[in-house]
Amino acid sequence: MSGADDTTGARPLPTKTKINSLGLLMTRTTSRHIFTVLVAALLVYVFGLVHEQWSPMHRWNKATADAAFVLLTFTMLIGPVARLCPALRRLIPLRREAGIYAIGLAIIHTVIILDGWVEWDFARLFGFEFHPTLGSYVMLQHGFGLANLIGVVALAYGVILMITSNDMSVRTLGGSAWKLLHSTTIVLWTLVVVHTAYFLFFHFLDFHRPVPDPNPLQWVFVWVVVIVLAVRGASFFKTWRHRKH
Image 1: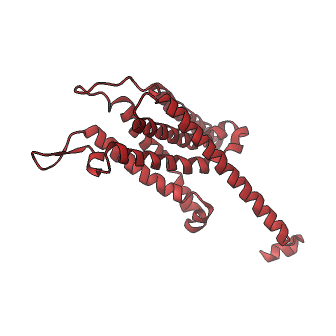
Image 2: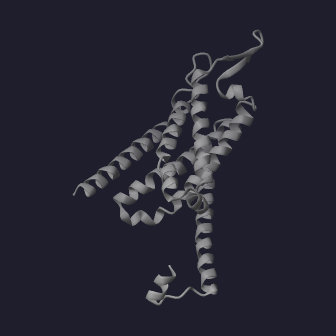
Image 3: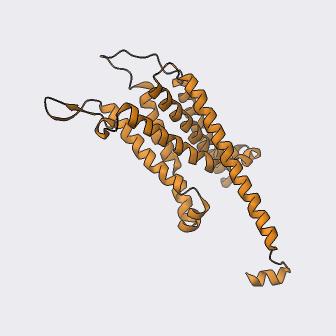
């Protein structure tokens, strides 16, 4: 490397320049974090208004879940969208922060569920209820249990992606391994879609309890999923044609 510097006549940057460059980089990174936090807070607030007819526990578990889904969906869309419209490539750096705060909101959503819905009884989280006559837990809510199991798997996977969303992890794992890990985020998004679809369309359809009004975001969710799949498909087709020719 030093030979290359000698050949080109380049000299190391002065210490002050290095510090200024690092400061500029940190400022940009910090700005992205601040921007994403503000967007996340706004999303939670807006979804809180959408769900204000629910009890506080359900209102805010839904609001944080919806906000997390929007941020996660952004991470799924921005790469393919940038391939279709190169002018939007400048938004790609926000993908990391969006993913980090999507998982952060998912963690908050989970804590609200544990505290307010199942009251830290982990058996209830997976559809079991204590039967006083039998003196043991019995499975009563199969769909609820399966959907939450999928949600827990998605959250665990998301946390792994979150804690490796930094430059130190890239250096530690190596570029190839890091890219392989983060290239499978579509799996995470798919798990989240299945988990969300159950609670949007099926959980509250119960013959022995009052059925609440349909969630106003049901068909918005469906259209978002369709758009994501269509955009990713179009991006794949464009990439395939480009490489073919």
